[in-house]
Image 1 (cartoon, rainbow, N blue to C red):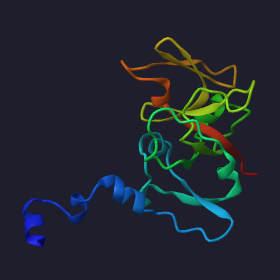
Image 2: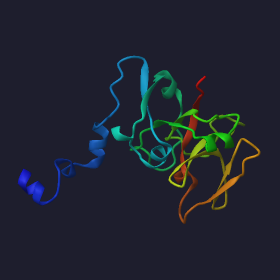
Image 3: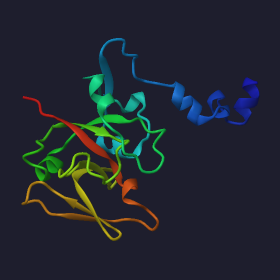
Image 4: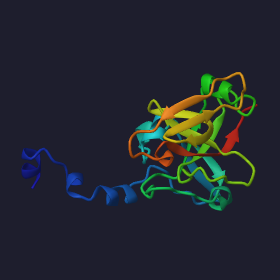
Amino acid sequence: MDKVLAVQHLSVLDLLDPSEVNKRASILPPSRDEFENVLLTDASIAATQPLITSMQVKEILKFKKTFPRKLKAETEGDRSDWQRFVLIKVDAKEAMSMYPRLMPGTTLLIDRHYNSLKPYRKSEFNMYAVLKNDTCAVRYVEVAGSHLILRPHNQSSPIEVIVMGNGKTAAEYLVGRVCYVGLEA
């Protein structure tokens, strides 16, 4: 069987359903205490990869299990194969557009199962990680026709506009809602 696979340039994993492999494969060590392990990765990985591989992990941070469990999801489209929570660090440019809410090096917890423009809390704007140039822009978001309007918190930063592709929805550009902002002292 090994010779047949070699001739066909296949591995055993190629014979399996990828979604089944992904469900069973986990790079997160099992958490036996009251803390949940969440992966810190690059913004470009968080924006484009449904699952984070071990090579893409910069760090594993812990959150009380009760915190992520109480967050409600608001998913548009199928994100069932997306790892729900990921962490990113904000670079200086992104942080300055959302200053003083964000600072360079701020750690953001992104809920990638919340890609709806529906407000999480009444009369509050959601802060989103948005797919822009294969990475995350962090802004407030609105839709105007076939355009996404990316609004900064810092009034001296420019408003940006993303033209949505034909047949694409806003949800496809929303990486996820920022549900935690961690500033290091």
